[in-house]
Length: 610
Image 1 (tube, helix red, strand yellow):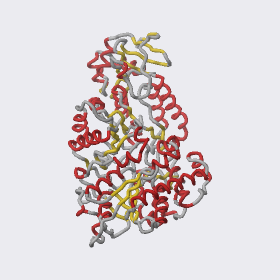
Image 2 (spheres, rainbow, N blue to C red; image 1 turned 30 degrees about the vertical axis):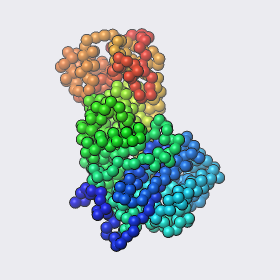
Image 3 (cartoon, rainbow, N blue to C red; image 1 turned 90 degrees about the vertical axis):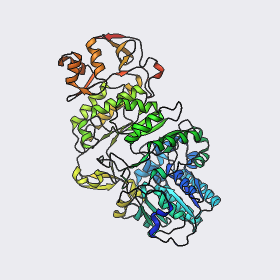
């Protein structure tokens, strides 16, 4: 019964073990603090507010992160949210809670990202006053703050500011930074917080808003919600507070098709700590997904960002094709498993899913096995190729420092990178980070680490906590005692990725031109392969992953010819599997791309036989 799905109904409040009595409803204000992404709505804030109002409760919203962004400036704000400096952004508010940062390196990073100490104090004072203005205008009995996107320290800072101004108001925190066991030490260390919700917020916040008193200040709410009963979020308050930011072309509103991870519930990727204890997968019906997308598009005319950990197979088979039947609609973003077929990719493009985040992580089959990705490198290559042909931007990251890695795993990838400049390169090269709830965290000794330590920034974030409590509230850790093989060649690997990006932007690579046939662009020149029936047949057979035996049997080419095509970079061979590396160009050059790379030239500089 632990994974039973609960309908969203006041009678099923997780606070029922507390004092139900003759409770009076509470007037609620939900606050979204920094550093919520500037161009993406807060799903949790808007959805929870919608839930409360649909149950007849008085609830207002305040998206105060926009106030900070207006003063900090869009560029500096984006540096916090778009890079790996989220914890540095948290330091801004840790300083407001605990005084000047004692660690010199943390202070330097904070100054470089945000500004001088005086500038930081001015920013916090401005944000505090803006927040208090909203509190005074609403006069709430209960204030909720979300903590999911490097927002914990900002939420704690604002909670203290509010309590000092309005001691009688009750404050509740929710979000990923509050998941058990993190919530207990947090509420003990920060008395300005009255309640912390670990898990799904709807039933817990609903009970609190109805005036119930929970049995414990840490409210456990981990049973999945019946998502069919959850309302479509109302984003009018969000767009009102966004002001001028709402008019930006890149502004998107968030929605969810599912919660949890269907893949992780079966094969938990070793590095992934997302979903915490809420890994169990539950989803909306495909009919509901289509209706919600259409309703949000009709109401706001904004592109949509799915917060799903991974696109549901049922939605891929049913909701996505139906969305593709509408003549107009929003562009969508989804995270997807990388084992999509070409027909899946075509369906995504027809449904206007122009941005995806596939779980590629590596172009080494051996490393993908260590990461428990359930896929091989050749399938990752296939997905990148089909996305390029369909004009879908595949945003992905290369992981390094993977337990079990060898130098050969990276040498193989560097060699492959040189052959695929026309495929979308990774956004960045990221060392493995050990996140709470991940298999790396839970079983670190089995992966070669002797012990774990919270990242150094946490000591500056929570300087009053002892060692054990600090380890209990931290989410990001580093492993101690394992030799990091990647350090020996990381510079060469990162250099290869940089070169890949440079060549991709230049338009290098292997293409099938509708008039000129097979061409290769390289450093501003275009080389044409001499027409050959055998070559054309092989390219036709190997557009998707197939076997060497099938290629030889159906093309009439000798095995040696297949090897020659592989050596020429036309084919990619992995064991018995093979795929060509050719990106097919459309008849209309305007239909090509969306990846940022230049469209290949159609002029022939010289010719080259296979």
